[in-house]
Image (cartoon, rainbow, N blue to C red; front, side, top):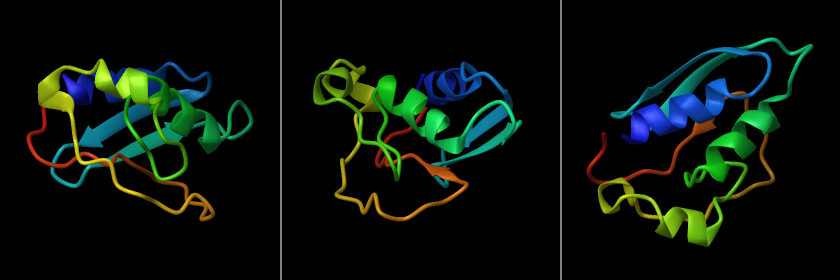
Length: 95
């Protein structure tokens, strides 16, 4: 469920052509057209469906509404860094 939700969120961003979330590394590889979107939009889309990224924290209520098997340890993270990769903060059981 988590993999599908995260990839679908990333692919919903205009300009994103591919998204592949790896449950083992908790990272997503995204291919996108930089003329059509910014990586920040991908972070925001993933956070909007309940998954924290290194740049955007999901809304607490949205996170709480995830199926219990998709809950993860929500870590404190530094949002001052910039990166072209999106890290999901999942821990524990993954789908």
